[in-house]
Image 1 (cartoon, helix red, strand yellow):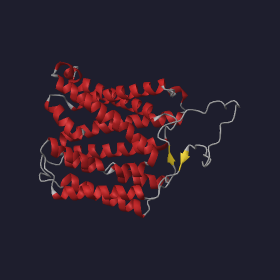
Image 2 (cartoon, rainbow, N blue to C red):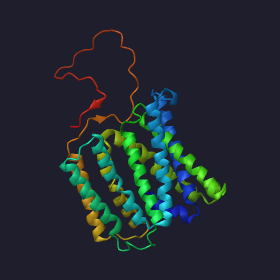
Image 3 (spheres, rainbow, N blue to C red):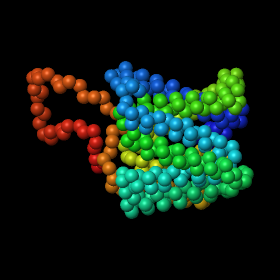
Length: 327
């Protein structure tokens, strides 16, 4: 939703750095509220000091990668046509797949190669296949470099988030990552535009603040939490390929709210992306699924007591495991 949403926000006078700071900040607050709700229901807060050195480094790298991704993308949008930025950014699933194969995590078998090729081809068709594709400005080398750096940051985030800080629950990890993005963007907004770059939503009509709240919750908190959970469930390659559905959704929203028509080539590209999603979901997983959030440490063994009555016609249940296989 962010491409369409940012267009409305910019029309109301907010600059990119301020938009990123507000969006990430509201997302961090919303995610922190979810963390607090979980703690009240018996969850466990994983503190920074309780992490080992590797987990701290991984969470720090993921946080900085998320902040760098946001900054690079919105700077690229200012200098380069949106289609070119998206085309460069969505090279990251290929980078993730190549890195995962080199690391020995997920070998690139035939279904994965086919899904990646089909999805990338469909993504290109979605991005450049519109009636007005190729318009909106010249090709700026700095903008292209920023978009490619955003793709690299996303690749780093996906790879690090698979195994790097497993002891941190998904909601707590995303609250930290969004908080770092908000702090970095806020500092840059103050440095570039002064205090007004951050206080503008408080002095403008309520429409701007309403859009920011909506974007912070449904364009940051919810999707970021689900994205990290998805990476932990199905692995970086599958998550990266399935994320190629995002340009399809973005183009459809632009057509609905910004009157940007969808061309036949874009429709064919969207169908190709959906076909690739089906292929990758039906492919045999290369590694066992991981639970989407860290589990609390097992408590003390229960004291012996009266045996529960045995239910008839029931198969014995197996003990839960940390890693489970996909059906």
